[in-house]
Length: 161
Image 1 (cartoon, helix red, strand yellow):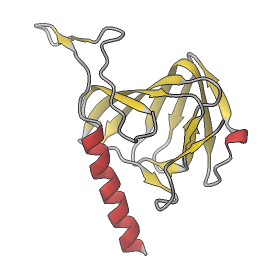
Image 2 (image 1 turned 90 degrees about the horizontal axis):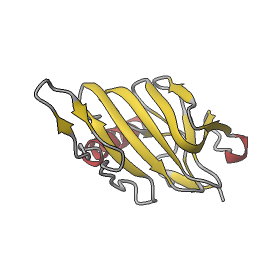
Image 3 (image 1 turned 120 degrees about the horizontal axis):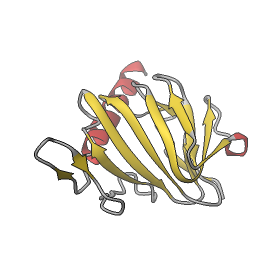
């Protein structure tokens, strides 16, 4: 069983690496400053459920700082999972709901509105997403990153509406 979980975790990390390739049209000046104007993000739908991800900086599959911007459509949450690194999350718009622990209980999620911050400690199980309205969040971390779902044989996302 441990070998199966390890294989699934490795496969998940490889999938994350492919999904989060840099996806933003950035302007870099002669001094190395990078600018991405609002609306120039290039989102991808790596999970097939409407959650869109734009990599603004770095590569989450490699060592180093990365910055992701994630658009959550209304009514969807990730199932319980954890990451191998600390992640710093800021809510840019909408209301983002968060919960911790192995039990997926969307009704008990804590709402975080625009401007809110949350730190996900490495290795701690959590789940998150939206309810009535969508949300855009920005995640900063130090890779390599990955997702280890608590129940890898089940769907990774659930509906909340």
